[in-house]
Length: 314
Image (cartoon, rainbow, N blue to C red; front, side, top):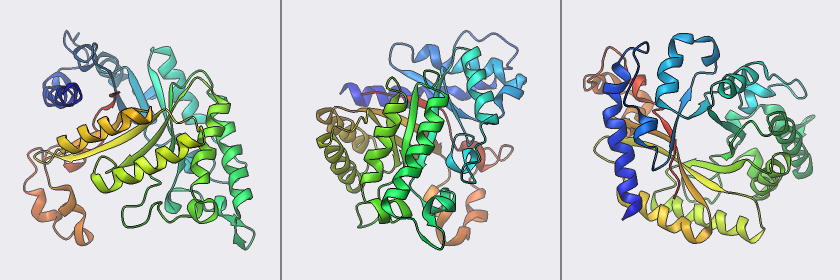
């Protein structure tokens, strides 16, 4: 089917990327990822927040990609680590660089639904946990401030990141879900849309192409659709192993999203040559053993993470 052929094309492009990226940035490149994908989708990359200061990387970046996503500088912990103290210095430089060079920006992310990825003050009301209305007020102020600052300059936002539970629960247990249930997700999208009605708004998660989590994703989308929440796309964080890409699950997910009226973005895409699951198991006790499998020791295992981010839309 067309969706599966498109996905195969993505992986083929990435397989050939090594040769293209190995050329020196100073040499003009007749072939590039962005040109190869031109009739299919836009292709982008997650990059260091300091890209504006790294002139040596600019030629390679501009030849290969049309979309950029900052690594950290737009996340809540960087933008508003302390309540009311805003830091947009690095984000401003990132957006200015993208605009100057004709690159679209994906803002990542407005709400991260994990307590350890959110400044603690969001969840506190003096000595007690923040209640529903206080949390919603804080989400609104945070989103309005950040999105309106870049209104018209950021094409897409990852509005809510990783809210679905990996286990038996529907939503991940967090300060957000405890106080607000599903409502914090709906409100985040409503606030973002009000702040910039033209931006594409994305719900982003991992393993949501797999059957169990896909059902939760569908449940969430149906619920938000019934409330007319302005959610435009879901992001699949494609964290795969080289011989375990779940093609059938990805295609089933693309097909399942169509009746729900949302697009699908491959929001992250990395293909590990070392088994990811075992790498993280039991506190990393197998890492020395697994490192012997690394075919790129000169780069280290981290060289394989956060490969190109592509707007792969169904």
